[in-house]
Length: 367
Image (cartoon, rainbow, N blue to C red; front, side, top):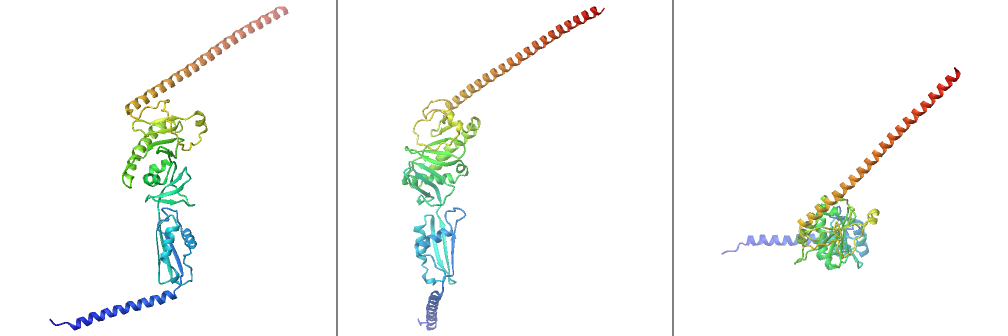
């Protein structure tokens, strides 16, 4: 088989031409970058309108503090894009990703994406930090956001394993996000919530234990069950008796809702009660009865109906008494009015008789 020398020479010439062009392009780019200066620094926050924890001024300040912020009118070769990316990831707690690149025109572009905090931790041991949607701890900063605050007996392991999924579940539901303002963790790991409306605290019970890394599904089911009962109690209970009647509502048991009546003095002052670690059982809505959690819903409903009947009977008797009092007063007034009228009539008759007698005597004397 004869070799096709023309084809081989054609391929070899193509390879040599490609190597030459690559060498020429590299040489020209090096010369141009050596003479090109930095003319502009463009910082872009990818989700600034969504999170609002970062802005261009903060990014610039952190880079200047790290000593790697691009200087205008300085050679573009002095800009180290890798150092800029590492500095942003290490020095700025809210940065999720950082990317930096240069252009031939002397522009430096820095693009940053933010981490999404889902809950803020202010533990009783003094810790103050955020937990993001990736179950990681974020340092606290001067920026604030409309996030749920978790207080009480909290360590970092519990915050990343349980409170981070809880924050994601609450923030993902528009109704729950508008109801819940604060979460408080008791020493026995029971969860209390402080609603935005009303003057009371709601106990949900301990969060469900789960296996694996992410328990968002288990916590989602737990919150759906508890918040569904709470919303129904708000709708059919507190709307009728008043939002400030109870100071503590316990819904941790599936078959009953236990309420603690507010003290009269506290009810008059209407001062919001902060979350407190209280392990004492809450009093039932109509007394100090602390029924077992295994009580049936039917028993609770019957007890509520009996209490409602008693209240209705008491109100009816009070109404009847008040009406009888009013009626007796009205009758007494009518009687007194009649007697006064009769007395006035008698007096007028007597005076008229006396005057007629005097007039007749005077006429007789004249005659």
